[in-house]
Length: 580
Image 1 (cartoon, rainbow, N blue to C red):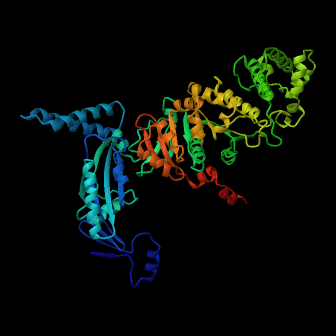
Image 2: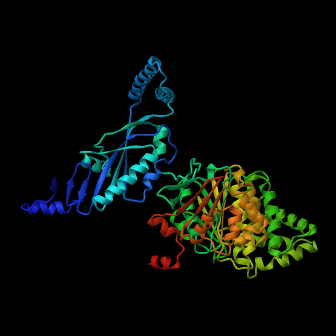
Image 3: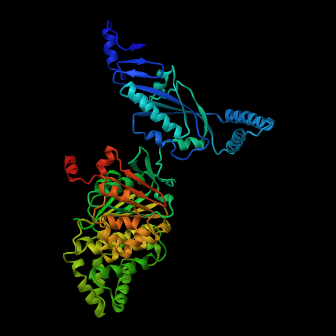
């Protein structure tokens, strides 16, 4: 039987029909539908296994051939569901007690119905009428027959009973189209947990724990499953990302940052190469370009919110560390005493005391401290003032020459270190890390936070940066904070005590493409199989492994929308093309 959509004698009808989507003609057989460029056959699933696990439809949705999988869901009103369950339970119990020989299938069905009725009565779930339908496509009838056998064997392995849509081939095909219309109406009652397990938003080889902040990492490389990960659902919120240059580690990290912002997670980024400026500008974040012209960061600033009654004393102790970093050597006891006295006096000269009400007054500058030291009679004070001259009136003064130009506040805070010269990089890095630690450890402002240290090898070269990474890796979880370490130098990370501590305290490990020279060390540190080694050596850009607990591993490929890609890419050619 042939149906043609076009009419030879109706020119207007032909013109209208030509603009409609769909085949120009089709032939409906008993069990198949033929198109001008192919043929298809449909099946309705009439039998299901007694128990299913998460992602049990993954083999069907990941079938390598052209297979359409359609799931139609209709909620059952609670009152109707309760009445039907009572009748079903009564029938099953009656059949179980009246039989002379035991019927184990009936007994199991009665137990399931009783458990389902109890769950429904407590409001722990609902019932749904669900129809699952498959449509197999092929180029011709012979190929279709082979594909049908493969799909039926696959369904049988999942304990699914697939019935062909005999004499309803047209209805079967339209049922699997995205129209939302179920023309076959071969349905089965599912409860909430069984229906949730049927959704294909899971990777079969990843048993990830998900809570309130799941993030799309990408698609499973070996199937069409979605790889979701929630770092805050694990015992440890830290992560480490290791990849060779150009493998897409910064791209992947930016995608996670962008998607965590949707979950109201506050993110602080230490950005050595100024790669996060475009992302920060797009989402209304705060960018602090330390070392850039006109950018000042005053180390004497006191917190706007309460960080404790000892905030002034903590600032005085931090300034001792800062001055020691400026001088390039630790301070001796006598110099510390003189400096501490001068810092307190400098604050007092600007009306700032231990009284919290005075902390909102304008803070002094480094030049004010140098003036106070010059006015002090102790010889250590004059020597200290002379050695601080490059940061007060010399070539290093730009970062400390005025009040803070941009306060480190907001949902995304980026400390860009690219413009810092090598001579002042340790000092600027210490200021950025101190500002981050003050936000993280503030007990008056507890919330989910993520601290991203991109190109972490640059921090590990500095003493203060290494100490910060070690302290945050050990104690971030206690402050509801995750540390994301991103590096391309696997040898330095895995060959030092600091790197081992970071890896040991990372609940999430991301491994992207690796260099052949580093793969042996990576494989030993993360217990990779031979197949995983080969995958990491040949992985494409953005492809990698996500590793969690025992057995929680999946190969994924990062995916992004066009707008996300524009914000995450680090390709200079794409950046240049976007310039007006």
